[in-house]
Image (cartoon, rainbow, N blue to C red; front, side, top):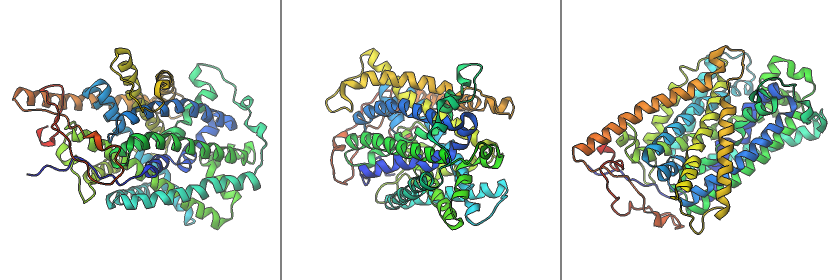
Amino acid sequence: MAEAPMVMKREFTTFSALSVAFAFVSPIVAVYSVLGVGLATSGPAFIWGGLILYAGQFVVVLTLGVLASKWADSGGIYQWSRRLLGSRYGWFASWTYIWTLLITLPAVAYAGAVLMPPIFGLSGVDHGLVTWLAVAILAFSTLVNLAGRVFIKILMVAVIAAEAVGSVGVAIWLLVFERHQGLEYLSPAALPDHQGVLFSAPLVMAIAFSSYFAIGFESASSIAEEVKRPKRAVPRAMVVSFFAIMAIVVFSTLAFTLAVPSDDFLRNPENAADPAVAIMAGALPEPVFRGVLALFVIAFAASLMTIQITVSRIVWATARNGELPFAHTLTSLSGATGLPRKAVVVTAIIAVLLFIPFQSEGIQMALISFSSVGFFISFLFPILGLAIARVRGQWREEPGLFLGRAGRLIGWIALAWLAFQIVNVAWPRETGGGWASDWSTIIGALAVGLLGVVVENWVHRRRLHAASTGQTIVIFERDESADEEGDETDLDSGPEPERHPLRNYSASPEAV
């Protein structure tokens, strides 16, 4: 039986990589998802938490950019961790990132579905209908991913247009015609009084709840093997998308906050739940309001599509090394351009199934909180691996690496920041929903970790069994000489990989 191809065709440009990172958590998605809880917990000074978050995440972007300029493999976080500290360490990085993305899918789909009924003038829609609308949005994004990279590019252009009107356009309108507060409304002195531990301080909580503002930039690395000149394109795409999202999110947050009519407006439970929608409903003519909501739905659909791109590529890359169950199925590519369609379908099915245990009105914020801490833990894997590799003297500075020698100091700052932010986001704050809700992020992280230990142990036992029976186990390594070529030709698999009976995994999925 012929082996499935192990490489994908390079049909994405630097702009494509930038668009993927931009759309992953578009400004519309970021602002709409967390503005309500941010204003509720920290008041109008919530924006300062976002600015501190961006300062911390900037050093993370730079550090991951160093790794992206050294290794241009699909599934960046997994591949970087594996190359730095070995296959088992890389496996847990992959597992954490995969489940973070899978849980993010229903969270984003549901948030986008909530916006659909008002477009058609419907109110009081029950939770069940919204769930089915969320499944429909997820199905649409899956079909776009299956259709091919041309359709992906088309939706990327659509989301940029949606952002231009839905984020920037609305923000300008609010600042010019619907500004009800002065800049003093944003003063840090307006933060609520604080008593208790550090992580209960309003500003610290604002940093935690704004976490969703500054993730997704790493998704550009997930398509590295599909991008021309990836060692140059991917780090640039990560940094540019980070600043583009930051500028629009801060501008939009400023506009919506200054458009709050009064403190009583936020005391209304309906307005507090969705302040962005409530402000637009009062500020825009009805047809314009519905049109803007439609643009919001487009942004959510594009975000879903890029999250699916990211999770399908990391699943495919992990399976290519035989490190997941059903690796032979997950690693196959189809079509003339080589798309991981089976991985796309499998991840979509899992995301739909995740709607079943999440049938409750109050689950949305818990999902966002869990996915946020999952992203920070995922970032921690390669950055901690880089720090350990440097201490051990195993890291080599090469000419042309992103940041050059400055990357050493930046890496240590990024490590300290991530340690703080993981504790901050996971901290069990009182939600009013009981201890299970307060501890849900920690419980979810532990559940994913324990399941990972079980699955990885099963995979490792199969490797040991293969070695004991004399089977050759190898890791698939690409021919990196084509990474800087600018054409769209297919890459070949390169020379025969190095073999080792225990240390490496199998390049042939059927051997695992």
